[in-house]
Amino acid sequence: MANLSPLLKQATPVVVDYALGSIVRGTDGRDYLDFTTGIGVTSTGHCHPRVVAAAREQVGKIIHAQYTTIMHRPLLELTEKLGEVLPPGLDSVFYANSGSEAVEAAIRLARMATGRPNIVVFQGGFHGRTVAAASLTTAGTRFSAGFSPLMGGVHMAPFPYAYRYGLDEASAVALALRELDYLFVTRTAPEDTAAFLIEPVLGDGGYLPTPPAFMEGLRERADRYQIQLIFDEVQAGVGRTGKFWGHQHSSAFPDILVTAKGIASGFPISAIAAPEQTMSKGWPGSQGGTYGGNAVAAAAAVATLEVIENEGLVDNARQRGQQLGEALEPLRDRFAFIGDVRGLGLMQGIEFTAADGTPDAASAAAVQSETTRQGLLTLTCGPVGNVVRLIPALNVTDSEIALGVERFTAAVEVVAEKST
View 1: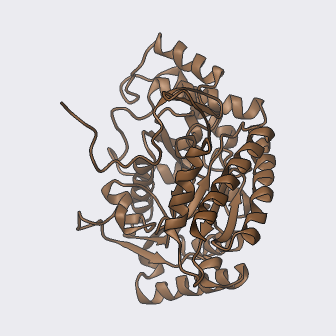
View 2: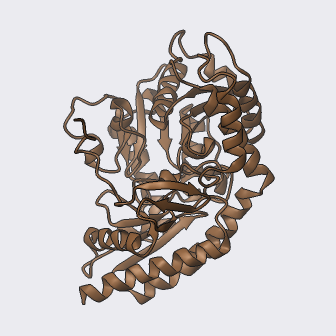
């Protein structure tokens, strides 16, 4: 008899029977409000009728059409739809299956396009678990420990984490940019640097929005030194932050953009986009894959983009995100172990901190566990696991946000009472 790997730790004990919208029905007969969305994947909620219909129709036509062998219509339609929302100039797209694959494709392209070896990443970033992606990940040693040697040519610079440093945002940005410039004279010269790789909002690193001034500082340095600026929009993209792309909260723009997760409402597909001039500098054979751009996943992605547009879900994410953030904010003053509440749109994080200012992972874990008992599904994140993250679907309603806050608050109250 086979079992799942013991390394796979379940965040909740829930076994799903079926799900619709923001509600998951467990085999225990209970309904749970889902503020995890498969870690930001089911962007249009569970089993949106239009996404289901598109996938069901495509399954009856062709399931797998390897796209360097025979082309299929859903991928052509998806490329056209993506072209409507991609930043100006990013007119060439390569498809893969996962965020990790797309990140690796992006850094491979950047190295080939520039002829330079080094990649600069930022502390707390998460870019995947495959070897190269894990080498780029600094959101916790658990992602990269135990299978060295890792990929070379990766250099880490500080992220402007104002709360951790005890600084205001402007001072944290100034510090991080100074340290980046110092990295250029101590570890990787600009002429050896192929790319900066950053998330517009840190995901596993703690749901930290990247300050616009820092994004713009990276853009300025990328232009000055002809460095490729890669935005990892795997979790922050496709409407999640109340803008279609997370980087659009700043004036900075990417040279290469990475997307996955919410683009297909749960079907596995990812992509990188770049100017055709850049993409053409990749070496022959450097892009490909058996399942990339799968026909059913592409059809689901087309339907997802149509739903997001037709139902106004980017604006809904902005409005419901504001509602969620404003409802969570008072908890920081009410409970001593909540040190920070932050986020953009429907990507909100609550950081738990002990009285001496150190991370309080135990309280975060206790709250996350208690939310399940309260009927709300949540997750933790952060390098030491002391942040609870809330990731509702883009079509979450105002009443569901209110109910989620009510259940989250009840969970915090239970844990606070037990700790006194």
